[in-house]
Amino acid sequence: MKKHDIRICGLGGQGVIMAGMIIGKAASIFEDRYATLIQSFGPEARGSECSAQVMVSDEAIAFPYIRNSDIFVAMSQGAYEKFVAEMKENAILVYESDLVKPDGRLPQGVRTYGIPATRMADELGRRIVFNMIMVGFYTAVSGTVAVEAVRKAVAHSVPEGTEPFNLKAFNAGYEFGLSLVK
Image 1 (cartoon, one colour):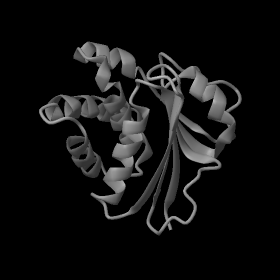
Image 2 (cartoon, rainbow, N blue to C red):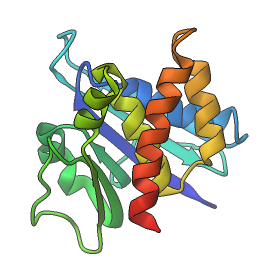
Image 3 (cartoon, one colour):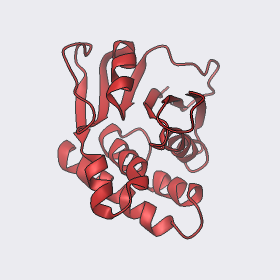
Image 4 (spheres, rainbow, N blue to C red):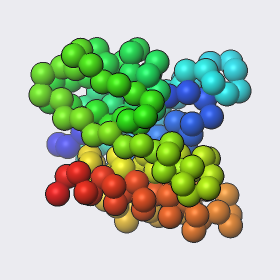
């Protein structure tokens, strides 16, 4: 059985929950696998810590809470600080390289992949697609969900009329990720 415990964390306004929803939707709806999503966020509308716990599995998931992550997506330094100790050995750390600075607390064998997603979103002209860049990057470096399934999930999850721009952002992150894993 293949099962992936994915923790996505950052700040409110970065699209953390949407990123988790897209990964879960890609696996469950477009790959006919099992997925769960647990979300947590502070009372503030923007700027507070938030997280999404996503499990993707080939079999039914009996317990949806993540104790230790196989993949940790850190979109802010605070998120990294809070959850770095809860990664498994040989896990994958995906992080925003302008906002997060990994340190010596990483468990043994962790593979790290950083992307300047904020800068890339600014270059595209809209910071709001930061999370789509991160999802594309995650898709390329993790290999947990097929790229076409994630593209379909992106197109089905964003507001009507914004699909091309969101997919452009997703593809930018995906291509950046591919350049690191080849």
